[in-house]
Length: 322
Image (tube, rainbow, N blue to C red; front, side, top):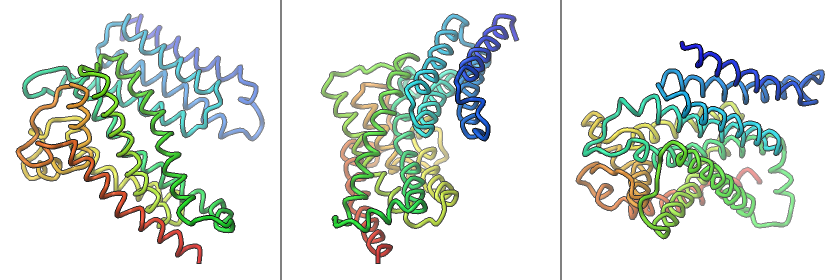
């Protein structure tokens, strides 16, 4: 490790430590959760960015900008009083972008060439929105355990109102995460090559996908008895469709027997749709209907998720209420 790299790492860690200690809540007795949130937030940012700089081989001047920019994000989220869930969601999203763009990107060739960073970002968007359903699942389970759902059941209101409100709120929340991801993508070299209308269409399609996936999370959240179980169930259901896809690697790089599944995967169709609308590299992924019409297939997937899981979620909610 070069002396400059070590100095940068130490400086970032010191900045995080100083900011944590000047917070009056930091040393309160019994405030262990607050300690974990603050130390984890600043420490993970600092270590992750130093790792990207050193292992990824980024020139120090560029890496310094990235590192201090992300520490600034950490300070901003903490000072604005964002909930730990939102802060760590932003942290996770930024780390995914930086790690894949600078650490793994050089080892993944694209058929036909093109910038891997531009290829990557739509996949990161799709993965983040898919995993957001896990957050919805855990949130619904937590609300049920804390008795919040029971209070809503006692009110004279339509049974579906609570669930619909939750899904819409999650879409707004995911829109905020999407903005952070796009800003991070612009910082690392991602660009939108087509016009404003295509950009807005891609964002609208992404939020439609987030809304559809949130109904899956709502349904699963009502089936699980504890928050711990909800986490395991949600990630077990979402993990395969996010990574067995074209989000990070072209379909040609997958084994032949996995390619049909990945081609029809809703994450793959959303990723290909956004690449097409953003004007980013979009290698031909196959000869099937999803590869030829990814936008239409994504809309079909979204409609299917809502048509299937919204009634199931509302029915489950009514059954629990009886």
